[in-house]
Length: 291
Image (cartoon, rainbow, N blue to C red; front, side, top):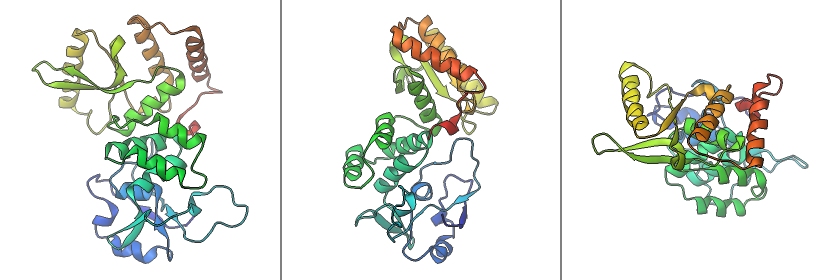
């Protein structure tokens, strides 16, 4: 990996090639290198911070034009770059949106990969185009990428919603629906982040950016009282779901059973095993387990 680092701005409206840095970036890039993966995704407006990571410094993600050394295992530094997979922005070469989305899905840890892919899909990258590109690239077919593509959902409006959905699916719950529409108190449409409409159980990811402060909390409380009066049970989820998913998953299981969900024995056994493993400190899984 290159030893270069790139300091990321904390202002999500500013991307690195629009705040006075393009000349510097162009000057320090190795000859022929192309910006890729997390760095390219950030340039395209996609939040690809790892769970729990704060804005700061991390390695500049590049793809180098030279072939990989003989007998090198799969390595994102030497992925093939056919014509049409790169573009130029402010004089700096980077992978196209579709190729960036595919590389994030292929190379990032699973939670990060699904969250990034959800955002690219939401931003308009066509899934058929991703699958066609993957079929044409050596090493991009198979289980790992297929799993990330299968778990993706353009309905996720934030990385937190993506992480929560993946944790539910991997625990053994049915796949939740995203952005469930519900009539609001004044005829407007409310959207529950994700959940199970049939049993009126929903989950909402309360990120720090939009759900802190007295006014935001009062809005959330009023909204959830309205939903509760109409038979919905809403489970608020915070960033604690990543290091401590167990309590949230147990709350979902209890709510679903109370609202009439009747899983078959294999599903219940899988859920019970998964929850028991999370309760055991020696086997507890955190976000770092999903690679």
